[in-house]
Length: 351
Image (cartoon, rainbow, N blue to C red):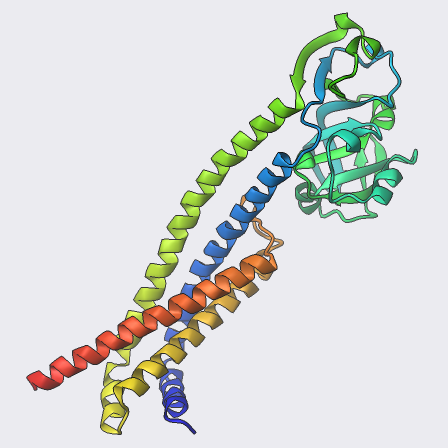
């Protein structure tokens, strides 16, 4: 057995007598790393939304608000009609009010839904009561593909779960079915047409309430997301600093508690080099264990956390934070172990 490995075994035996301190240490670091993981994931998700909007290919489309659907006089193959409203949804004994889009089959030509396959899209408009549900809404109502829910006393089947920004926190259903139901609500009627399309051929001019353009709408979304990004960045930096301070304090505490045992090991022949190497290995293992406890906490809390604290842990974030935790543990262990060796030299000279 090498001196470093032997020193590590001795340290583990010493720590096992005070296992409560180790458990509190691991849990304390794990909680800090969990929040770093959460805000790092949310930063990545927000950046992906911004990139999604920036890559939108229908920037020159026109968006027109109408006062009534009856004013449409063109064929729906050269535009898409959408009812923007909110309505009550009943599922798994939960009744909630949700934002709702009732649209036609052309919607996907103007508002890109990358997470919905072509097959799922066609199934949603095959004539049966079908719906596409956002990830946030599916999570809240505990819905999965193939499940059913109630909307205006009609039963709808979930054909797809969308993660696309255009459907965030929304429900999409076929406009013909929704419009034919009694007591359905209508807040806004919108049509989206190509930039070079003649609006007069599609709708009566006296029915037009407002006009917008796709590029202006996307610019507003990107501006809002950039503001939210700054908000998240502030929280991320706060918890990033908390994690560094917490890990530093824990390492200082462990080195302080180890002082008496350090003197005994010195008497038994442990060199400064062996002490520094053993401290690096020990503390890096503690931080890595804490990080994976944070990952376990993520999966335990996933079905329980409120929507704001919900995040999806990607492999990219896992690897980035794993590298951060490993490097931070290594650097801090080197600094504090070296300082402890210097302090022991000073004490020895004074003695």
